[in-house]
Length: 74
Image (tube, rainbow, N blue to C red):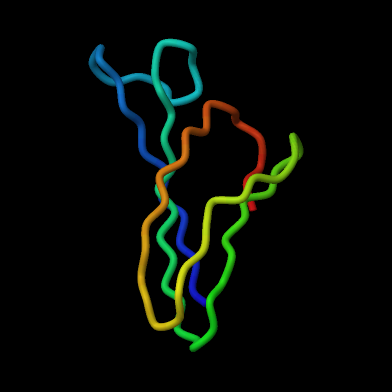
C-alpha cells in the first residue's frame, strides 16, 4: 500500500498560515492500495489515533482530514 500526505489550507481571507485560528487546515491523504486485500487507514498523532476508513484492493482513494494542529501525523 502506498500512502501520500499532501498538506493544503483553505481560507476565506487571503493566504495565511494553516496553523492559525483564522484558517481551516486541511490535509489530503492519498492512498494507493496496490495489494489485493482490503486495508483500513488510520492516522496517528501525539493526541491519539483516528480511523479514516477502508479501501479495497487495487483501488486509489483520497481522504481529506481537518488538521488544525502542528503536531506530527503518521
